[in-house]
Image (cartoon, rainbow, N blue to C red):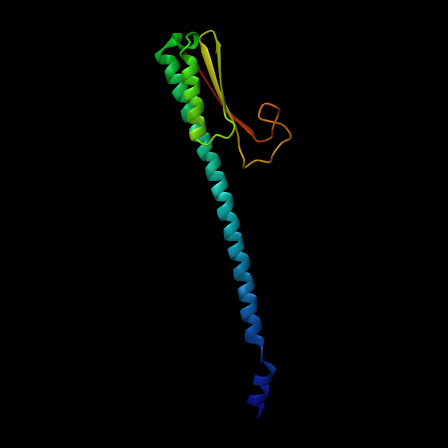
Length: 139
């Protein structure tokens, strides 16, 4: 009889253990999902930065190949091509700026990084999401 009474006192304990295990498992799976979302966001941000880097180096190579390029009318078509390349690279509201000071050329690529918190202004108005990459070189 002692055997039966001890079983009746343990009734439902297994069910509680299963419920706790399911709760712990579901919290863990939500953490994995949040980690995956963050990973994708940071991966896309790294992709944008590498695309901006490639575009800046491509523009620098074009300038090195033809130093008079900055003074000719053909630069507008090339800048348009670079703008299209920026759009293809998914650089949101991207801008390309070229500054020549003597023999030093500085190419700045600026875009909005949607991973960061939104600011109050547009790209040129101190938006907190504005991300820049500057490349300076002597030609």
